[in-house]
Length: 296
Image (cartoon, rainbow, N blue to C red):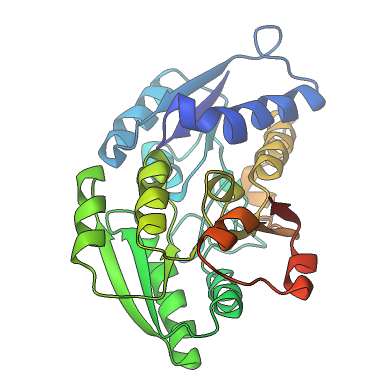
């Protein structure tokens, strides 16, 4: 029995998390309902539920706990020192206290780091190429999200080198999103720190940004498909398929502490040309050629 712990909802996780993870299991010889059972636990965007959900999986004596976010991995680690834990997404697993090092995780935890903070500066650089007159940048982030401060700090550090002023838009719940847009003075673009709360309210965020005529950048292509301008980040379905391979290693006897934490090697740049035109942005052909996907 495999436990799966997520801060999000079953509906949000389905396409990019649940399906690729189960497909990855199938590719390694495990078919749910036949030779493996997956116990899913979703916190429905309520991070304070994660410790209890992790404890429930421990009580059920699952063989491995898979997590889809840093907060979920930390909750699982606090719940057990013996059951192997594999995180599919972690922004800073060393700094966050999940593992001793990437090469030698130690303990009962391993997984994949998706370098959210390391690629934050790259996102801002891409945004500036599209908005060359970018002088004031808004960053919207759920400040209750444990890794938000790290990513915001990386964006702010890059912004300083580029001479860009940063205006944080801090949210903690869905009801905060519209007011921070209304209260914000004029900015030139919007950087979105993605987490469960933002994913659950992506239509609201994108609609408000478009209404304010703000170019946006995210870390995942789903926001661009929904009308955001650009995204730059790893291929999330691939991360979850790879997570299933790590689970297979552990089920076959490998100690998780001996499995190095992996990092994505391919990052995707996705651009919504329809949104760019609606915002009055002229995208150079050379820039379009760099995109892995252009939505028209």
